[in-house]
Image (cartoon, rainbow, N blue to C red; front, side, top):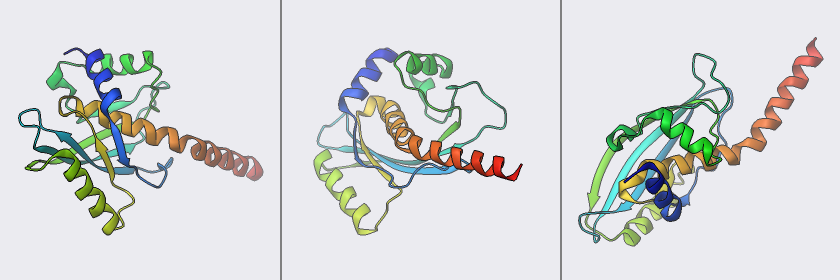
Length: 178
């Protein structure tokens, strides 16, 4: 499958069941824990559960606008280079800020239950533990990386107005001090 087909499939089938409540940090790193649930491609009565986190940080070097660094998303498994992915996203109007997005997948499990039951279980668990930081995402198993990027892009868009407001406040403070 080529990059276009993976993208279209992810756009069509990705659902964010629960998103992180708070905004991304503009001055420090932000950790975005997530759970991605997918119907198994081997047995549709099973659910694939991926748990991980994405650390969003400012890179050490200055990057041109809309040139993110993506690490740990396993796109190499699909023979997709980081540069071709970024170009692909930009051409489709998906502009991630020039930050470093490091994905750390720390758990991959199979649950012998249908996707709908597993979604319900994890939603209830996140509510019960009052976890407002972990995102719960549903997406196709063969393009989970794109579902994860869709989730991150949604958080960036949600944070943009707040980021602009904070940036303007910092500028005002700076000019008052001069």
